[in-house]
Image 1 (cartoon, one colour):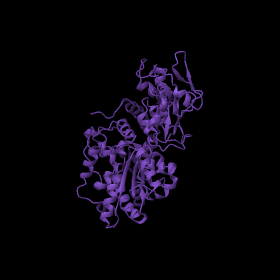
Image 2 (tube, rainbow, N blue to C red; image 1 turned 30 degrees about the horizontal axis):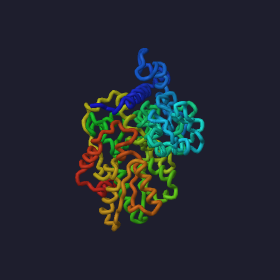
Image 3 (cartoon, rainbow, N blue to C red; image 1 turned 120 degrees about the horizontal axis):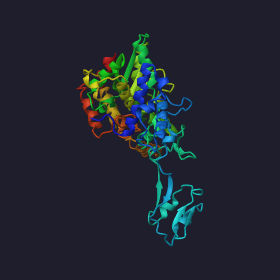
Image 4 (tube, rainbow, N blue to C red; image 1 turned 60 degrees about the vertical axis):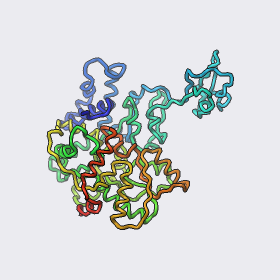
Length: 473
């Protein structure tokens, strides 16, 4: 069974694996320039115009796998020399133009950007065009199209622009680090900064007995990943990698649901706080609604806080599908509790950099989270958990939730709330399609991922949210 969905993921994995392998051996600095030659040996290019361009791009991938540009605060970085395969974005007149007599496109253009050639066929003067789209609206042949680049279409916050060389540029003050552009770029020119090196250093120090325990906090969406082995073998693999303990982030989800139910009943309306990209989106686009964001920390931060309160020597690494978590740990209220973040893609690279054969390991049982805590991984799971928590605490409150997956769905619900037409008192917001199982750091995006989360949740048996929390005390 395949580990990845596409070749871009595999290419990034190869880079990360080799970077990690040298980091473990302490040979990274003297070998970082040789890694591209290891991945693309010989002189025959496999994807680019020439082997030299291919290796140059791989060198940039190596830098991002090592932590990226420290002066760039963005979690997502653009490899500009890899961003060269897309046609220029904007309005364009296609061959469908019939050179009609009406020329409505010319009449409606506010800048006189439509010109005719000797055959009366229309063309757009890009030096005058302001991309208003009026010409496309009036063309009777729909001959004028708005060509968008994949990253531009993926980014719903319009945080991507283009420089004079037509390479993408991410506007950091608008980016919510959701990773949608990373997923959609067909050339892999968008890549999230990796924190693998700092995690490897923590693992080395923990193994050397530096008076701290290193905890892996694993997102419940792990149940939909690593399809070639069993979930229990992944848990064992984390201990083989050097983590002292492995904890379900779903336990933090149980704690959040329990507290969020009380907060909702008290305030009457809330938006969820578990998805950091959604939280940033509300603050950026709907600042007037930011007061309604739940005051609870995310499940990641909640369980990490619990761990550090119980074990002051602890250090924690969150492992999940989310690139936005790499931005979340910079927040003042989260920074003390979570020391680093890895995606599932990066975890696979770490496993293979140590030649850990997951399939040969015994199963390690996950912790005692409830079905509802584990269901946070999919769209609708948070709302279901809050409903259950209200019932378990005998709170008399009529929950009317709306589950939104994807920024466009979130935007629609928030607009209705602003207009006073939303028939709901709890907005569950997830930036990724279908929730965390659609995160940019996933290994696979198979349709069966949702059913795997359901199965993982059912493995909790009849354990309630209250049971899960009580076991922690």
